[in-house]
Every structure is written in C-alpha cells, then in structure tokens.
Length: 216
Length: 216
Image (cartoon, rainbow over all chains, first blue to last red; front, side, top):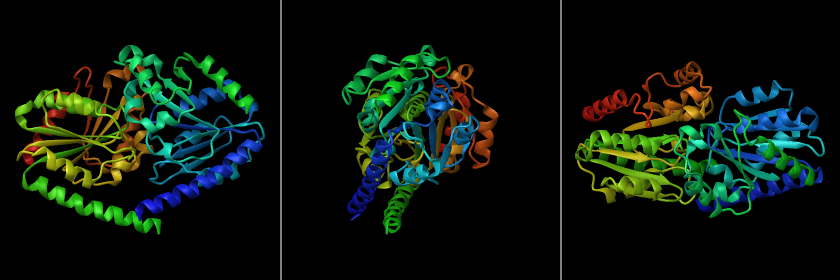
C-alpha cells in the first residue's frame, strides 16, 4: 500500500515535470536543476554565472530551502528575478513547486533558469522537475568517495562540478578514485574542476554552459 | 491520504524506536546517532573515538549508506564489530533497520554503539531510531549558515560538533553567525570545535562523551 501511494506521487510528479519541460522547451529556456550536499557551493556557482553572463542574458533563479531566504536575498540584491521556495521540512523540490514558482517569474524566451534544490545528495535525484540539465556540484572537502556512496545523484548528472579546488592542498583527496567512481556510473557528463573563491577553471565551465544554452 | 500513510509509517517507527531505547537503557548501552551532511567527517569522528577509547571499551558501529561498504571496511580493519546497512536509495536509517542490525552485533552491557546515519542534513532528523544521544556534525567548509537552513537537525541535537577547524584560515566562516543560528534553535546542546586531521579540540569532546557514557 505504501509503495502504491509513492508510485502515485511520482506519477503525478512526472506528469507535471513533463508539462514544465514542454514549457521550457517551447520557449528555448534552459532550466538547470542544481543539486549538491549542503555547503558545496550551489549559490556561489550561480553567482559566478550571473557575474559572467550579466543581467542582460535574462537569468532567473528559484531557491529551494527548508527554511530561510538567505540565498534568495543575495540573488535579489543583484537585481536578478528570484523566487524562494521554503519546503518546511521537505527534503527536495518537486515539479509542482517549480510550476508555481515559474508562474511568478515571467520568464523570457531564450533565457536561463537556475533551480537551486534543497542541499541533499539523496532525495532530489528521485524527483524530475522538468529541467533541461541536471548539474551536480561536489566539493573537495566532502572527499573523493561521494560517487561510491551517493550513486543515484552522480548517475543522473548531465554535468558534474568539482568545486573548492583551492582547498586541495589541505585535504586528502584522491582525484583518481573520484573520477573512477563517476565513470563507473556516468560516462557522458563532463566534469569541471573549479574554485568559486579563486576563479580557477571557471572559464572552461562557463564556455560549456554558454554552448549548452545557445544549442537549446 | 498521503499524510495519513506517512503518520502510520512514523507511528510504526516510533514503536520500534521505543523498543530499541528500552533495550539500550536496560543494558546501559549508550547509542549515538551520528548525523551530518555527506563528507562532514562522521566516520573520522568515530575513528578518533575508537582510537582514544580502545577496543576494550566495547565499541560497536552500525554504518548506514545508500551504497558501498567503504566505511564499514575501515572500521572492520580495526577489529571493531560493525554492521553495514545499505538503504538502496533510502535517505535515512529507521528504527527497524537498527533493530535488525543490533541483533547481529551481540552488544555488551555498558558498551557504546555508534550509528552512522546516511549523509543527509534533512531526513534522518525525522526518524527516531531509539538512540541515547543525537550527535550532529557540521564542518567548517559547509559554511556558517547551515543552522538557518537545516533547522530540524540542529533543533534535535544533543551535541553539536564543528569539525575541520584546521580549514578555518582558508574559509569565510562567520563563527558568531553559526553560534547565533544554533542558539536560536537549541540552547541545551554543547558545541565542540574539533579537527580530526590535527587533533584540535578532541580532548574536551572525548571527555564529555566519556562522562555521558558513564552517567548512562
């Protein structure tokens, strides 16, 4: 019985996700679902993209958090349209929440939408929100073993970021093991090593993202 | 209807958690539910406790992961009794899983049991496993805003660890804001600043833990 209910929830979510996906596709909107552990740098990466692409590109942001509007306030101060979703305990965003937030945002055609999911390397991977791209951010201090432990997240990724490269000298991080773990799950997603703090590697990542958006 | 089912699941979990709690209490076993984001140092903290207290104290470990037995293998190599629970996608441990694992462990009276939950700063806080103490580990590179965003976890804590203090010089971490966020939710839990890498602060934390176990 529990399983049946769960299936119904996921079915309903998939139906709404398909509606969102059609909406984004018809308007050539690139919607990026940004997923990561708490504190991996989701907001920092989005801020770097805003800084590089500028307001004129038409960037909007949906912030997902259990509580608080800390990240939405930061985005709002830059004059970027942003909606904060507080899940009130919920561990992930779903397609219904995104549909409601999108109604508030009045997105432009050919624009970019960043959906910052709740910081959680488990649950968000099970809920399609209709995104164009799934971006997973790992960070050096979390350690190289994450792809072995949080398989579904790395499996589902369209692009993987390894952030906080500036901390590499102070951490026992086995890069070979990290890459090996990812390649066992996902051979298609490009992996970008970056540091939002120093700017390391951002140029290549931002160029890739620009290409994805213009192809869309 | 969904809410009703969820309530039934949580009711059933609470019943099993109460059984576990009675079992631990009758045998003066201190069961510590260790919860944190992925890569905050849950296993590292447990390893430091094993190193300090020694095998003779009677330490056992339950490792919770979606996949892999990386952490259980590390514990096993030290000759410490360990059971690995693979949740296969599940985002938290529950009381039923702990009851099954405890049957396998043949715990001694007056011993210590560490339950390393799935790396997730959201869902594990909703599932009582019958533990004696809830230990939350935050880490410096995750940032000082975590108590504001992951409220239920910090609210529920009996003790809070701030790990990876050795990285403080390389991170913009506002310690005042971190403490303020916690104090708004939880005035009872002691907070220990430590570094598993350098050993900083471990003495005070280990002394506190020893007192808790002997009071139990």
